[in-house]
Length: 227
Ligand SMILES: *Cc1c(COP(=O)(O)O)cnc(C)c1O
Image 1 (cartoon, rainbow, N blue to C red):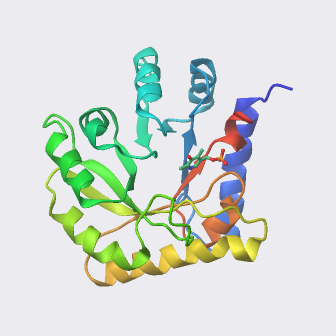
Image 2: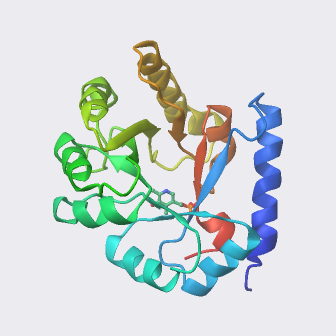
Image 3: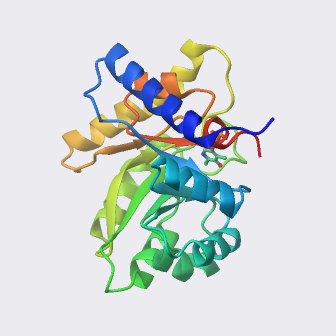
């Protein structure tokens, strides 16, 4: 069965509005990036025609090929994958956002490489909320230190925090890691960081993420169907 991207897009907008109302979030405070990893150029065009403007990719090489074919569209590109040190120049040149900052050296390199003709690169610090050590992201206790470093880098704008929790089916448990991020963002705001973003929530847990203050959902499967 082929998925109808326009109707999925409309469905997502309706869900977002419902959950904003249900959890007393201001209308329009939650948006989503379309996670287009492993999706074809045609499907990305279809999503664009449906109204989507922000797309997210995990792998630089794959993203660069797509960007080339989609040059005629006004897409805001988000990088959500592992940032390798030798790719920072290309990432800083081709993306508007990087959600997956988890070390100071990478942050510094991205700032150094951000072209002068572009506005500062928007970034989120990725936090590892599950205790699995092989996952990306810093421990939540290290957030303040990395946030301070990022704030001093002239060509980056620290916007907020991001996490990819371990998979959970139970709603209350889906909320736990997102609640931790919500509290951490609040702590940083009290210490005068001006943050406006929580990048959290995927196709399987978007309600839990919105309940806990998500401002950017990252949705792949729900929009495009399975990869
Ligand atoms: C693939 C991916 C998503 C999207 O996941 P879906 O379950 O398909 O919505 C979101 N965030 C990251 C970091 C991903 O790698």
